[in-house]
Image (cartoon, rainbow, N blue to C red):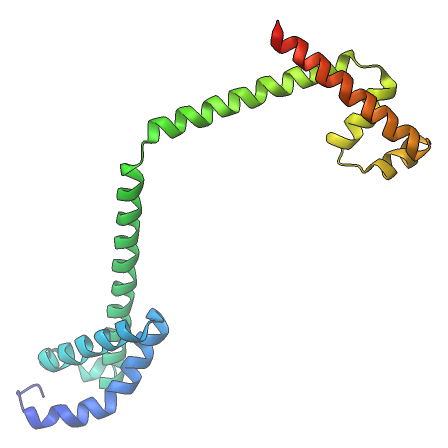
Length: 176
């Protein structure tokens, strides 16, 4: 092959095509791309046969090293293209609007939380305690009844009354 003997290529192809394709397929996980890399590698082996150094390993090892490098290069190229497309897609989005919207949403959420906490503070302990356990502690009404040593009906009544008082307090605050 190093001397350009075309009759040397078919036996080389038969010997190397399957292992080269296997390395490419394991690296790329895409049969179509693995076939392309296999073709590129075999052509490179044909063109650069004179560069082969027997003292560095077998022809198979040399070809598989080329295959692995080509496959890794292909993975990197695909990843870079995907990253580039994502950057371009994000660049086209109106970032300033989404940043302002999310900042405004966050500020509104914080203010609403403060209003709720203020209104909770104005409730009496019998209504505040079950509401705090339910909404901030994640407890069910049955669990709250057990924790507070109260009948379930009492907890439900206190929570209902507390929520009514909260609604009224928050509505009054909004009207001010």
